[in-house]
Each structure stands twice: as C-alpha cells, then as structure tokens.
Length: 205
Length: 352
Image (cartoon, rainbow over all chains, first blue to last red; front, top):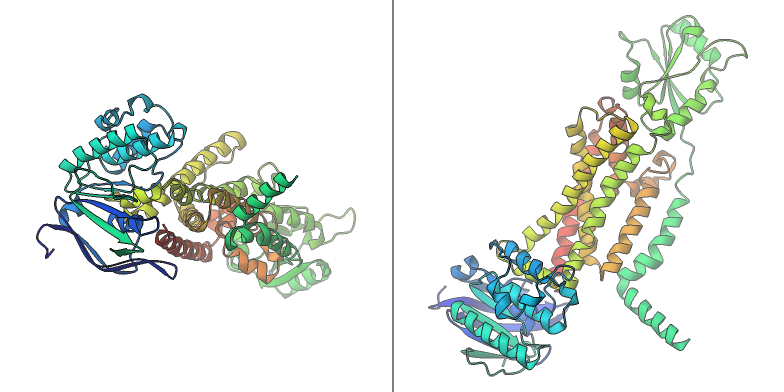
C-alpha cells in the first residue's frame, strides 16, 4: 500500500446491477484505526459498498486493495438482514460462525451476555423477535474476535434500549478492532465514529 | 370470493415471476409429455450371433432358423477357442447360438444380458430361434451367464440404487445456495476469511457427495442382507463411473440452486429432475427403442451412463462389459455441469 496506514484503498471502482450503475467511486482510502459511518438514503449504495469491501460481491471495474492485516485478520460482517440459520438455536448459530472462522467455540460466548442474549441461547433463531435476531447476527459477527468490522445498519429495527446496548458493545469492539465500517440511513451521533462518508445515488457526496 | 382470487393472483405473480417459474410449471411438464411419445417407437431387433463349424453347419442352421423372427442375424465360423461370453461382448450380440455340433439337439443358446427387461424379452424369444416340431428335442432353453438378472425380485434393485445415486445429490444440492441466499448467510460465508467464492462452491459439493456415498454403502449392505446380492469385486472400478455421476448431479443441483428464485422453485425442479431421470435415462423404457432425439437428450442425464454398467456390476457381469464410452461421457457430464454451476454461482454473486 502506498498510503501510510491505509488498510483499504479503492481505485476507480464501479458496481452495476444489470445495466444500472449503482456505485462509482474514483478513490477512497480507509486507514488503520478508522471508525467510519457510511450514511445515505435508501438505495444510495451503502450496502453495496460494504459488500464490495467485505468481498461478498465482485466488482465490475476497478480494484480494491486490502492490506495484509485485513487479509489475514477475521472480518466481523453483519448483513443488512438475516445472516442467521433460522432452524438453529442462537447458541448453535454463534458456534457455527466461530467454527466457520476457525475460532474455538465456547458454550456461552461473553458477547452473548453483553448483548443480553443469554436467556435466548437455546431458542431457535426464527422464534426470536426481529430485534433479537439482529442482536444475534451481531453477536455471531463479534463472537469470532474480528480484526475488522463491517456492520450493515446494525441499529435498524431495534428499540431504544437495544440501540443503547448495541452502541456500547460496538464502541468497545471498535476500540479493539483495526477498522470499523458501519452503515446507517441517518447520521447517527455515535461517540466512537471518527469519520463519516455520505453516499448519494452511488457516489460520494 | 374476491379475496380468494386476490390470493391466487398474488401466488401466481410470486411463483411465475420471471422466465424460470414459467418454464418449470408451464413448459417443462408438457414438454416431457411430448418426449414420452418418442420413447417407445421402434422395435429394437435382437442381435443373434450364430457360430458354426463349417459350411455344412451353416447350411443346417439356415434350414432351421426362423427367418421371420425379429432377429438381426450375423454368422461366424468357429474360432480357435469358443468362449461364448467373449463372442457375445465382442459382437455386441444379445444371443449366441452355438451350432458347432453337427447334431442340432446339441446346439446351445447363450446370453450375457445384464438388463432385466431385456433378459425377459430374450427368454420369451428363445423358442423362436430354432423352432422345433412339437415333441422334438432341440435348443431347450437359454443359458444365462448372469441368471440373477431373470429373478423378478432383483430386477429393479440396481436401477433403483443408480437412480438414488443420481437423485440424492441433486436433492441435497438444490436448496443449498438458494437457502443461504434467502437467509443472507451466503453474504456471511463469502465474507468469511478462508472461505470465499471458489471454496464455498467447492465446499457445497462435499455434502451431497458424502451423503451419496453413504447411501451407496448402506444400499449395498442392505441388498446383501435382504436379497442375497453379493457385493462384487471391482467396486473401485464401478466407483470411477459412479463418482462422476454423483458429481454431475451435484453440480446440476447447485446450478439450479444458484439460478432459482426461491427454495420452492428449487424443490420443484428436483421433482422434475426425478421425472426426467425416470422417463429418459433407460430406467423405465429402453433407450434403444426411442427416437434419436430422445437418445441424444438422454446423454445429458448422468443416470443414462451409469445404469447399464451398474446393472452389469450388480449382477456380476462387470468384467464382461466395456465401460469406456460411458466413462468418457459421464466425465464430460461432470465437467459440463461443473462449469455450468460455476457460471451460475458467479451470476448469483453478481446479483447479491
């Protein structure tokens, strides 16, 4: 990487769905220690950007360079919806994610307690309310001890109390992780965020 | 009533959304019916090889043979060593009449068939090979190299096992990618370090293959315990055919899974695959009686390539058949469907 401390560098990227170009970014860099909030209206390209950065979808043009610490480190990724196996219990979902990432599974991960999921560990994911499903998806992403985080609207669908819990937990994880990327349709006022990116119709505002 | 119609309209819109839904429900079943009409249109002649010692023997045979019977007759002079089974295989004949003895009463009729339905036909035709006057002795019966083929209890065993080995991997594979996509766990898997797209697709192949091999082992034990069909030598040889067939079905299932709109669509395609395997692979109707169009189409089905070999192996005739073309064709199937699955998965990823 040429940029000092740059963990991710995007060069002249474009993503299309069919013929429609949904995201075009000429140049963008994320540095070590960045805690980035990506905002924008619905359909502005926030989730697409996060998926590209996480390697979920391929680019149509351009390049994304990831520095070695990110390539070697685990990514805690939370999709905008779902991200759980509905037939499995919360505990099994957490253990499954840990197993997929090569992390030794523990019966009751501390993150489950921090997010208030202890009482639901034996419950099937599809039997949980929407808010608790989002909490479980977040817990699964954090249970692997990720080196960087990509959270797609982690606060959506949560009541005030859960938002508070999630904010506290994500803040604590942000202190530990090298990079935090988080999307939100609104400009959240979160104390741990160090940088905000605005997307408008697939372009940086 | 209006409420019911609204629900129906909603269901129709949901199910038929896009070309794939319409294809699955409206086009493929009637198309299958059109093809079925072409399955049993020609009467396949029975290939009869007559071996004689000399010209006099040939003349005797010519006088005795029923020329009106539905045989495609070829003749051969007695080779240095008479090995009927080898001759049957080399000449691709259904029946061999050993007419080397000057006395017609000593003539023998052989078959090396390992296809139960075909075997039954041959047995029925036996009296017409050399018709004898009532009360006279002659070719009394058919000498079968693999007599188990004629046992009606065992007829469907190898075909069913082969069908299971082609169907199970498809059924296991077909909901896997669409299920992950619907749960948004596909995103999570693709974002997981050490997995990525290529390994994810390759990993999705493993479960159907492992389950199919487990099924094979369980079925072999069961047929031995229940029906006394011994597991034959050459299992590794036959696996060289079965494994590509399992892989081909798995890849096809994954490709459909990547292209399907919903799990319901994917599972419907499994039912249609089952129907197509039953009808067009030689499972029910012998393909040699079908039109060339159906025979060409059958080449696309993994079951078509493993069915004859698996039958032969089950009844002990493996060493007598030449699986060469089947091995090549099934390998081509596996490669083609593998590429199809990779392309469909790439297409799916681009639309996540």
